Length: 444
Image 1 (tube, rainbow, N blue to C red):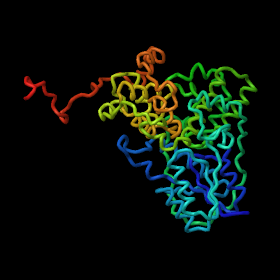
Image 2: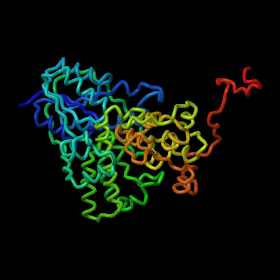
Image 3: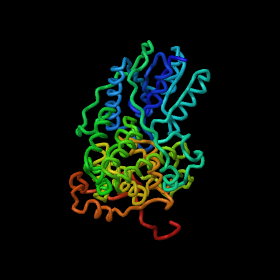
Image 4: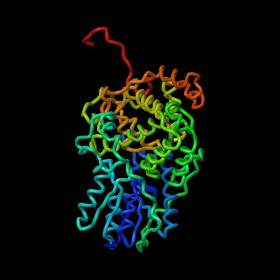
């Protein structure tokens, strides 16, 4: 049966290996393509002034522009709307002759709730989702989701022998566009990044993927992955994975072909391992829902931390007493990126040395990181803070040791200006209550 279908793009801003889009194409006579910019992304909370900062916003705009161009080449267009996603989609359904709504499967609780609310409002419509953001669909897992292994090691052993589906090709043709005059938001022209290699969209994603596997960086990945700087010292796939410009199954296939062509070694194995780490956190997020964002984590274990605004300001602005932490934060603020090793170091510093609420760091990463992915970001912060999947109950990295290991000549610290005159932690200023000496008499 052919339908008038609304396709709701989310974290799947691509045409290749987009099973949800393919399903919509196969079952539709007319198609309406929509992307919703959630107004809450630009609202603040107790920790950050907004949830989406300038680096991720630029990358998203670039990705939307590329997708819109690709759709135009196939006789379609991308309608970009701003506001409350549920209300925006509901208004379209109510005003147009829509028979079905398609979307990629969601893993974060807010997005799942949005989908369920639309189903509740329009029980007579067909709502269909397909997995596009993970290696496996939930039905392929060898356990029910409530029985998700409590550690990554157990998860990996249970899934690493499962076959990964081959990625789907992009549809050559799309159904005719639904005739509609939506007041779409024009996609602003994104400011060009200083690093031309970091451009949003599927075209840049596939170019980077091909270039990375054409070189010898793959076979040396394990040796370089902990470097704090250097574009090709890590895969950088996370830029495009986060927004769905690149499919994890496409990476998996390219890795398998590389191993067949060049040979497998510890480095290629490690790239595959990190794909499974990412996979684990996708299912972790869906399994635990709102507990992903809870102070006590998945175990409801409240850590002995608090929130000190001055300490958080020093950490986020790169003005602590630790030069390596400062350099990492300066790099993040300037570029929207930080290495995996750097993220571990600064997260450990925030939760251990500074004894801050780990959620403050997670929100700051959400605002600043181009490759922000809710499952990976919040899952990793829980891991470091000791309220998540780490069987050791948290990680504490010696900053001095990390400096000796990964920046022994201070080149990274110098480049990102980590050494500076720092305000002492918990300095007293005129806004604070005065610190009075003990009275001579206990009754005074």
